[in-house]
Amino acid sequence: MAMNRIQFQAGLSMAAFFERYGTEALCTAALERARWPDGFRCPRCGGAAHCLLHGGARKVFQCNTCRHQTSLIAGTVFQGTKLPLTVWFLALYLISQAKTGLSALALKRHLGVSYPTAWLIHHKVMQAMAARDAHYVLAGQVQVDDAYLGGERSGGKAGRGSENKIPFVAAVSFSDEGHPLRAKLSPVPAFTLTAIAQWANAHLAPGSTVRSDGLACFSAVTAAGCSHQPIVVAGRKPRDLPEFQWINTVLGNLKTSLTGSYHAFDFGKYAARYLAAFAYRFNRRFDLAALHERLLVAAARCGPHPERLVRLAEGHC
Ligand SMILES: [Zn+2]
Image (cartoon, rainbow, N blue to C red):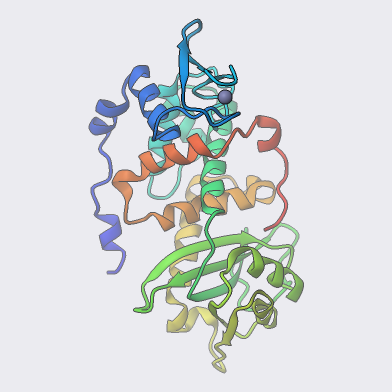
């Protein structure tokens, strides 16, 4: 089966993880490397010359040029945390290695923190994943399909979702040989021409070739400079068409992951984040062993995301 290469890769063993990141000093050094791979850079002026101030639990960097002081975690997703980095690193490890995602409740038990703390850690890490993937657009051969969170697939009937269902576009890009490359899963207000035009402008490279079933709204990808190839086969649903095998596989895996790990009541408010976190893992599915390190880089560079922002309902796209 095509997925076996993914399922049977080695990953990062727990023993190897603790050897690399088992102490606060090891985590501090790893975060410093992830944040500033070429050495310290002042976040205010970009200067490299600095001195270290030791006063509190964490070292403070002072820029020699502008005297700006910053801690290692200020300006990262860890900003403001009172938890040891070892707890955060273990969270990154558990989230990166869990095949079908991880619930905040499971994270609470593994980390030994309260449920609200685990929930916040989980959402901040998912936000780092989403921010990282937001840099990429899909290009080349792209398949798209309409899908819903919180319900069965639409079967091509636009706008039929109930109030509890969150409509989203499922899109996968392919190599010239037909191998799936990257996925984007993006909530949209509805499956309308306007919404798909906005989605395409945000997530597709101009010149891409987009294949979909006959749902009319997908013709709006031409607004983003893409060509559209609807595949219409009378009497057959998109899920039965071999052309859509990978989209179906991705959506099937998504459903398994969400129903196994998360509570449905979170979806309405945080759909974009859950979907982006799933796509982040899919897009790095061949690199399980390095996923923790890549997630650390994402967390170090995505900027702070305080609880106030984490709990805001998200806009679409
Ligand atoms: Zn400076």
